[in-house]
Length: 241
Image (tube, rainbow, N blue to C red; front, side, top):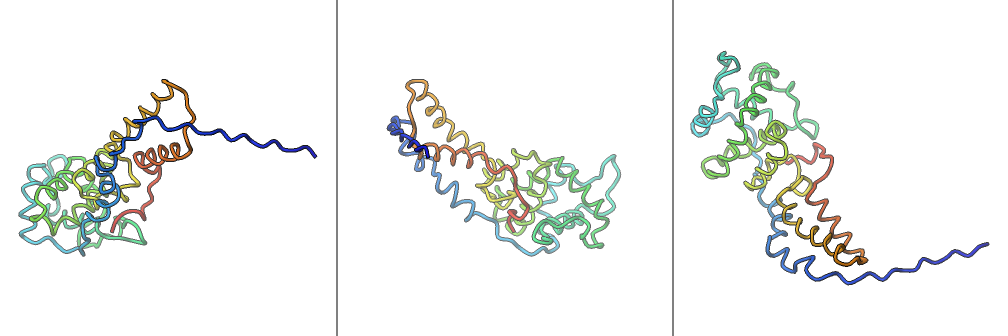
């Protein structure tokens, strides 16, 4: 029986100075950014209720400015914008079978589900939901009672509102309940910009002098890449309450 040759272990080289800045975590406050804020800055869920007169007065000027009081082709809506917005909020805040509720279970009192869904998509393409999310960030006290409903409507329309651009907007505003999944599972272009100099210095070190990095370096770079790039597939059960 032939003897198996033992692999010769290659001794890793020391890490060149300057690839990983010593103050990286503190300078960018990464622990708070990656772990604390996504957990502590979630909008408390509230049971759905029809908008009060005060809540509608806060939102009506925004809808008017965005041109969201009329249907397509100049035809008037078959109900008031307030009633249509209540219907959308009801659907957006409803969970069904552990995930998002389909339009078909919308109560008949709100009208035809297809009609409400067309209005929701039309308002998403008009930019209403990002505008309402920005209003929540600018006036947190005035719109506190509507914050949960607006975050739910925004994250349901996140693909229609620009996809990655909408994710970046919600994260920069600190409204993590508007994200379709926990923040660390989603792409983060801002975090990628923080990590980019490290990857560049790592590549430049090989051009200057080839070296054999320790395994911990590869693991660290891999984790940084995964954190900035997010998961390839986001399932609906990851969505916040």
